[in-house]
Amino acid sequence: MQRGWFARRSPAERVTMDEMNDAWVKCNGCQQILFARDFERNLKVCPRCGHHHRLTARERIALLADPDTFVERDAEVVSADPLGFPEYADKLSKGRANSGLPEAMVSGTCTLSGIPIVLAVADFAFMGGSMGSAVGEKVARAMEYALEQRIPIVTCSTSGGARMQEGLLSLMQMAKTCAAAARLHEAGVPFISVLTDPTMAGVLASYASVGDVVIAEPGALIGFAGQRVAQQAQVVKPPPNFQTAEFQLEHGMVDIVVPRKELKHTLHRVLRFFTGG
Amino acid sequence: MRTVLDFEKPIAELDANIEALKRITAEQGIDKSDEIAALERDRERLLREIFKNLTPWDRTLLARHPQRPYTLDYIRVIFDDFIELHGDRQFGDDGAIIGGMAWLNEKPVMMIGQQKGRDLKERQRRNFGMAKPEGYRKALRLMHLAEKFGRPVITFVDTPAADPGVESESRGISEAIARNLREMIALKVPIVSVVIGEGGSGGALGIAVADRVLMQEYAIYSVIPPEGCAAILWRDPKRAPEAAEALKLTAHDALRFGVVDEVIEEPLGGAHRDPLAAAQIVKEALLRHLPPLQKMAVGKLRESRYERYRNIGVWQSGLE
Image 1 (cartoon, rainbow over the protein chains, first blue to last red):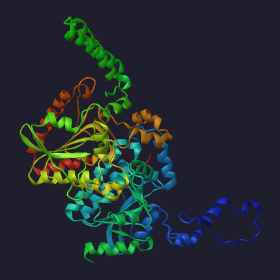
Image 2 (tube, each protein chain N blue to C red):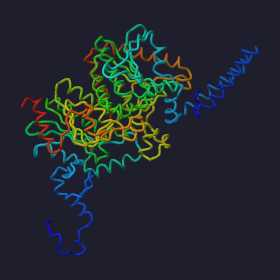
Image 3 (cartoon, rainbow over the protein chains, first blue to last red):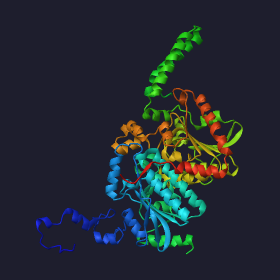
Image 4 (tube, each protein chain N blue to C red):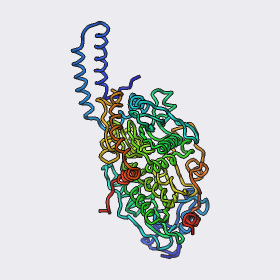
């Protein structure tokens, strides 16, 4: 709805704080107030400082998939509460409300610049993108489908790690997803892992680290243990860029750090190496 | 110095009394055997009673008991011979994971296990059983060596976690664990893992992807330590006992979820009360599980290992 900013409004029509908040956003990097439309157009990357803000799974899919080509798979696989864990049912409801998704991962097929791929994308708004049984199952199924179709798979991670509320079952999803990745590895089906902010712990220590190519977004937090734990653990002082994409690149754990606006193009070039196009 | 857990105190008192009577018998030649036998009966009754009602937190404390037998203690009893092999051939040697050639009833196996330290000096050398990337890479190197010569792999799990420090991050602790998961699932020789103490999250799993996973009765296996879980849930690490309950980290829980295949009994009062007997029970379990796996064709072996992990998890189909 386009209206003049300075037009007189009745009290009921006055701009609410929510609407104000919709129009303006504050950059989490430089704290500058940005015009929301510019921010969105710039793929949620701050035009001033380049800080990459998190994308939802749907936004990430829109960024990477060619228009109208994404066909979701396994949407029915959702979390249960196998341990009867305290507050888990509530957290699942909140996660669903926050993300508008039934689960912390969306997977399916699409084309990327014309190349057919399987695409599996996590959403941080759903319980921090954590991996429980349902997410593990979706990743494994996505990989098995890529294997069956002999098409590359691209995963985009954003996760605090394994989902505590499913206990050991979550831990075992690390083995399950790596098992599926092992089959891709043996069959020579390309697997590209994109690490976005944040990719931590049980997700980084499983499928996200065994891609044929590992790509990270600038500034993304990528690491094994929470910073507090890491700092307590040893006398070695962490460098200022500790557990960032750039730190992981410097230490040989990531192949390329790619700005968001170049991500699709880079993925296309990488995929072409594998698919011979 | 011996550590006595709170719920072990009444037993420790009886232990002391029995010891004292035995000493009198030995030193003064006075026959106290009737009294000793009576106390020993009391002790056994008490042990049974206490150990029947252990909470998950009690079991956590038992799994971390400073007198609990560690990997090297088991190796000495279970195997005829052991040649420790060192180093990952890339960076260094990690004291928190040991590995080498071992002979189980004269049959060669590759033995790999996490190792905690008994005294302060050894604890530091072993980094409290928290392996660094070079530990996981050494383990993988030895597994590939076993694969090359068709030897089965046995791993013993006993770690609070993988090392979370800056150095480990710099050398790719996540990648090292992830690679092990991917490689172990595809290894062409049988793998049997035994959780002998603390099964601490990804740090444990990094050497525990196997055809058979066995777990001692008072070992724990968890996605996060109870203290960490309590800190996240209630911002209060002191509520760890409640978190231990919620996490379902006991051997019987792990069995119920299909994460382990068998719970290995421990001597009454826990492995630390009779390490030799504990080791014999573990040895018997290994001898029962390994031969059938060694008879399997490689393809079938790998297929069933894949299915084993592929099928772990509980989710639902659609929202209600």
